[in-house]
Image (cartoon, rainbow, N blue to C red):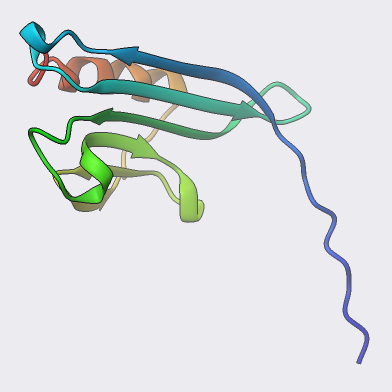
Length: 105
């Protein structure tokens, strides 16, 4: 039996941002990362609001979105739910920004 070698697809990281949140506004950290393929399309992403003072599970991730494990999903206080109405990465970034306002005052 001969094993086929899988060609490893490389993606380029195009977004890598971290924003500490002032403790007076709730504290924590906003972290956003995105990778694109050779055609310039976002194919992998992760965005999270991390605050161990609000939630200690899930590595402190209070709220987040990513598409690991080959599906779009949301993290909310340790619960994971599929994002069934995914349209674009940019739309999801806007949704994340609006939802995180619940925690950042």
